[in-house]
Length: 145
Image (cartoon, rainbow, N blue to C red; front, side, top):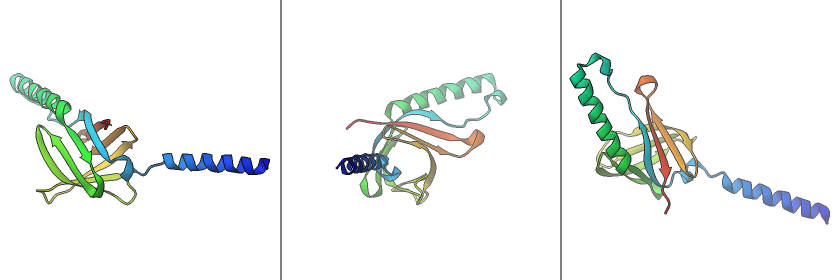
């Protein structure tokens, strides 16, 4: 009887741990608010002081607007909605077979955007595109329902 109870306890523990290991294609579903953004920009040291100041201010304004309104909403069956820079879009999403890449495409576009999934958990999604000085990094937090 002791062996049966021990076996049952181990089996239940293993099953409960297995249910926590959701696939990325399941974890990503939901609405994600963009809360940090890294985008490449030109070398302001090569600009006139006036142009550099104008560019910095424009980027600050654009980033502030993006962080206050931007989101991605990944739905079932590969449908997604997103808002960037005050514009709302509808599109599709999919993942690579190994679920390490995310592909998005606006309904009106023929071009897919490819992102590497740097991190994905129940509450955080970080996607990246490019590398080095051209790296775009988007950090998002999952919104509560």
